Length: 160
Image 1 (cartoon, rainbow, N blue to C red):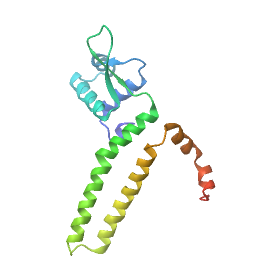
Image 2: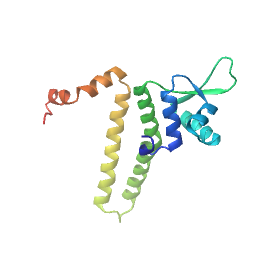
Image 3: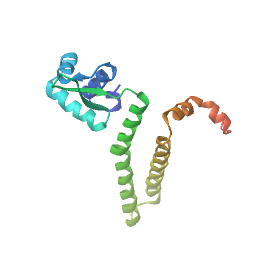
Image 4: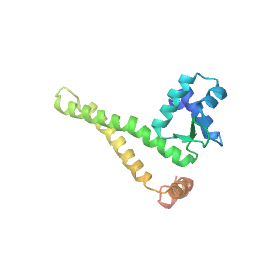
């Protein structure tokens, strides 16, 4: 699943292993279970920690570092979305701002192209604002909202 979302295969495998593991695992356990190079495990663990979805923990009596994944799927999803927004959407919006500013300065830019850039920027702004508002909701509210689906559409008069 991770590779389909553009995530390195080993990073995805390690995250999946830590997610389903009832106990924190050390790097040697991960190497042995997945059959991947120790260096690849170290690099992947750093990547997962940078995303904030895996953390290092210490086990009493064991000097090795152990790692565990977030277990709450809703919080995990929220953290991943926040990171993707920060790493992908925000820079895209900044680039669109620069393109629009350049288009305004350059008299050779046709109105159609400039409008396409503005429409794309508006789309990202609207969805980002909506997402920021949604992040303030408690998880239980988000779940209820998502489960409401068609009922909410009918309530607001947007029925099919």
